[in-house]
Length: 69
Image 1 (cartoon, rainbow, N blue to C red):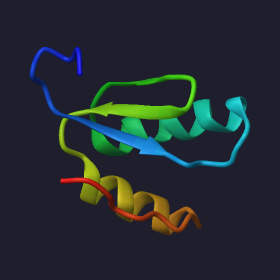
Image 2: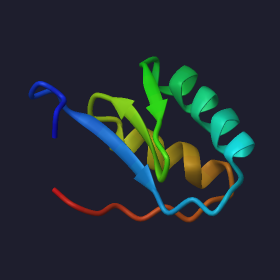
Image 3: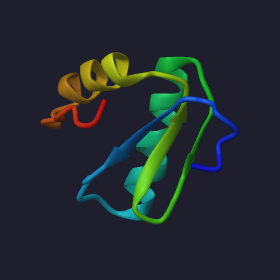
């Protein structure tokens, strides 16, 4: 909502500190080659980056789950 019709990838449910979330977001943006931002409860990357993010998080030791469309 409010993205002007553009697709975004939202990452929620990370139980990490704000500082760790900022570092993770920076690494994800480099990995995906796209922009992104950090909201209060989630990370947001521009475009459809779902498969790339899941692969990255798996390698980083997280256990991601895909949800939604």
